[in-house]
Structures are given as C-alpha cells and as structure tokens.
Amino acid sequence: MPRITIHVGGREPLRTTISKGTPLGLLSTDAIVYVGQVSITGRPAALRALADALVEAAGMAEAYDADPDGWNQREQAKREADR
Image (cartoon, rainbow, N blue to C red; front, side, top):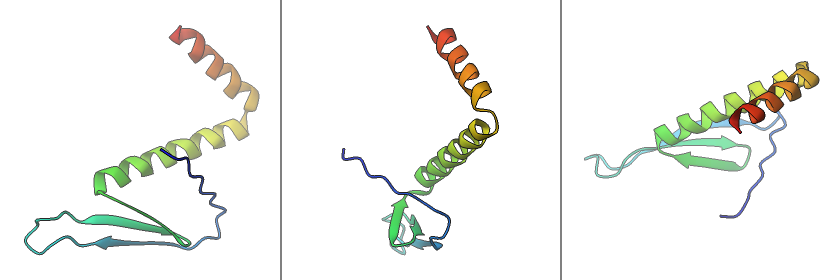
C-alpha cells in the first residue's frame, strides 16, 4: 500500500458529514471528515479507531515535548521489558 502523508498545521478547515446509504439500509452510512481539500471516509467504527489513534499520537507528542529525556528512558525500559 502506498504511503501518504497529510500534514495538518491547524489552519485547515475541518468539516464533517455523512454519506447516506440507501433508505432500506442495504448500504451502510459512511462518515466523512474533510481536512482542507482532503476527505477521509469510512465506517463509523473505523473513524472512531482513527480518532483514538490520533488522540494517542497527540498525547505521545505532548509527553515527549514536556520531557524528552524521561520519554526516551521510559521507551527504552519498555523495549528492554519486551525482550
């Protein structure tokens, strides 16, 4: 699968919407998030998983920025414990 990088700088407009399936429910409804001109679509569960991963990544970045040495020590300890 090709690698795609989307850099979000905080100024991109964010919009959300849905793409309705069929009235009889034969097709499911997709959630859509627009980040500037980019659209991310998927089933609700998939977008929730993506949102969880984004929150986790943001928390990791904030923790690293607050204490880079402590972060590196904790990560090294985790790697050693996994061996």
